[in-house]
Each structure stands twice: as C-alpha cells, then as structure tokens.
Amino acid sequence: MYREILITTRAREEFVNITSRVAEIVSTSQQPEGLCYIHVPHTTAGITINENADPDVTVDILEGLRRIVPASGYLHGEGNSPAHIKASLVGTSLVVMVEKGRLQMGTWQGIYLCEFDGPRQRRVWITVR
Image 1 (cartoon, rainbow, N blue to C red):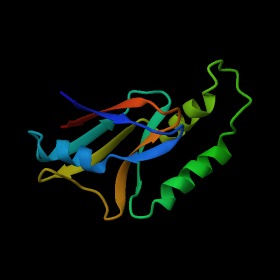
Image 2 (spheres, rainbow, N blue to C red; image 1 turned 60 degrees about the vertical axis):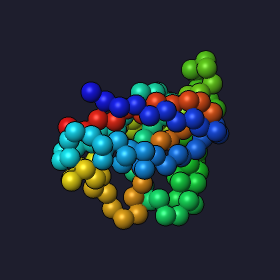
Image 3 (cartoon, helix red, strand yellow; image 1 turned 30 degrees about the vertical axis):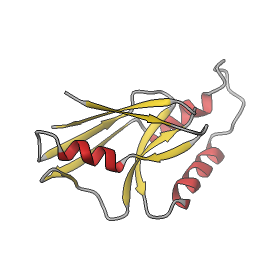
Image 4 (cartoon, rainbow, N blue to C red; image 1 turned 180 degrees about the vertical axis):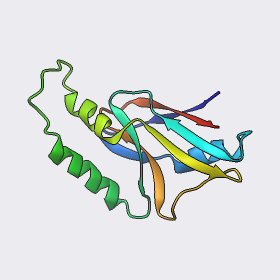
C-alpha cells in the first residue's frame, strides 16, 4: 500500500522540497528498514534528489533544462511539449534506502517535486518495502 501527498505548485516551473513530508511518512511506516519508493504519476512533472542548502542550485537546474529544451518547435498540440521532455529527462521515480525509520540521504540532499507545467495540484506516491 502506498501513501499519497498532494503538492500545490505556484509557478509554471519550480522545484518544491518535499523531503520532510516523505521523511514523516517513512518514520510512521510499518517498515523501519528497507527501501522508500517515491513516484510522481504525471507526465509533465518529475522527482529528483539534489542539494537543499543553496536555493540557487534548483534555479540553476531549471535554467539548465530551459537551455537544453527550447520553448517552441514541437508537434504536440497542447503547447506543453517542453514539460513532457523535462519530466522524461528528470524522471518520475526515486528509491531511497531506509534504516531505523529514517531516509538514508547525504547531508546536503533533499527530495524535490519538479513542476514543469504548473501551477497545478500534483500527487506523489510513497511506499516503504
């Protein structure tokens, strides 16, 4: 069984730090050891682990993705092809080790929902096995 968290994004593109919300679910799960699976069931959003100390890092990542994926020139009629491509590049799932009911992550790491077609309400599914 998985738990779901809802994230309301505020911008067309943004990174939302969800580390504490994931950690809370992990700490209250019936599985204190194992793997935490985190999945975003959307085609225009993703999930990643990156630095959570300097907010400029997520700004730089978004800017880098904008340089890699141009804003126009696509066939998809909805006008959000860049969001689909960015979500594919970033990915929609993560696995993090769990020990003693805690996420095993580096000191500077955080888990981010990556919004590429907002603002929207997004779902994140989390399970520990």
